[in-house]
Length: 385
Ligand code: KIV
Ligand code: ZN
Image 1 (tube, helix red, strand yellow):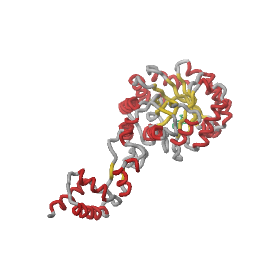
Image 2 (tube, rainbow, N blue to C red):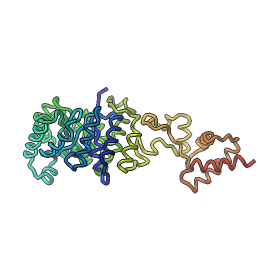
Image 3 (cartoon, helix red, strand yellow):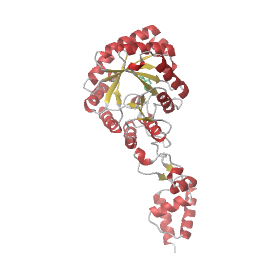
Image 4 (cartoon, protein in one colour):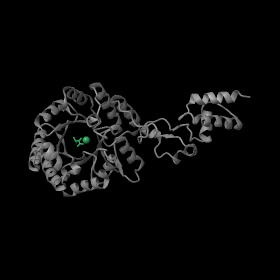
């Protein structure tokens, strides 16, 4: 089993979700829960972005002692200085510094030549290393960058002291095959790559962030970055709970392990959803309301006979108490009878048939039949002698 480090950026890239703004206390509560969840590194924020953000990162760095805390900085001295002030009391102060490397970003956003980008990157990594022991350097928009340019700049930032090289798919443009090939190319062509580790950071614009992260891992990445519930800029980042559960459930296919405590997933997801105000879609993998719910009669019958028929993940694995058989118009007699017993009724077969008919009539008027609805039907039938 190969060990994969989990870099959580819920408090930085996750907070970049449009409309999300966490205060210091909310950030600290999420940070404590991320520590219980077992992430290896947490990106607490972008200290130079505001006074409040600086204070929140500082507080997290002072409080969280079982996880390495990091903060983001642009490749400018003042960002690095501010990040140092916020992070210096962390157990293992770590800086995450980035500069764009794709032709479109260098020309239009940075207005720098590729040579100037290399010069700035090396200068700022060197500067950061005077303060921080651990420096992660990100090639923003790596997936749209020229591979040989990446090889060249990565060799130089490693010589300047970067210990983690992150290759983000900043705009969620890449595919698993292409992203995996990029990691392979970098691993095979960067002469000093043994002095650093490779990290993947994926966005979900084409819905491939988790698949791309898995592909990176299979091609040399030993650190995966993502957020809880997949929140983040635009369509969000790779959802860490999905990545972690995929590794666990398909360990026949992925011989990799993490330090994550999977039974903390539900609690972490709920907390992030509550504080960010971003509700989790019902059909979201792993943590959505419907992820362990079964509505059709055929599925409910199968699950009642053996849960493995339609459940590949046990709810307990991710900290959910049990699955949920939702009674609706597709439900069958088996789940209905099971519910009757759960509600404490003991009806003859004839009465069950009668109740089932009444229930089916109700499902034409109501999408989901609640326990209260059933109670009314069952009381009526039980007392109708
Ligand atoms: O997506 C991205 O490129 C980023 C960088 C700041 C690492 O979030
Ligand atoms: Zn990002």
